[in-house]
Length: 72
View 1 (cartoon, rainbow, N blue to C red):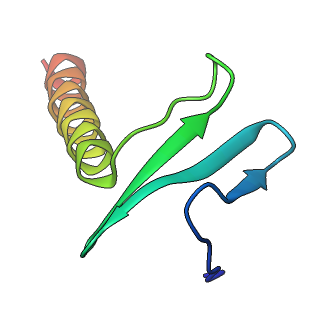
View 2 (tube, helix red, strand yellow; view 1 turned 180 degrees about the vertical axis):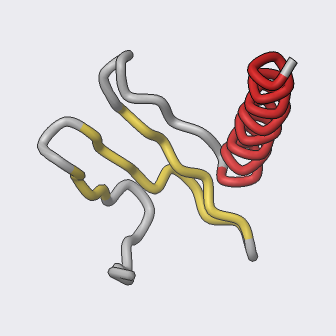
């Protein structure tokens, strides 16, 4: 993991097309602004994990149903 220090209104650039800017710092919270192309999905990690879990569950259920259909 790369760890960087940034102050308010400072930014970093990822892959030439994603910019993350520190908008505000209040105590333990940091507000970030993210500029990215529309085709680049941006999620909070807890939401991303929920999506991945739901997708995996769907694959597992669909895989079991497909196997049951094959076996008759």
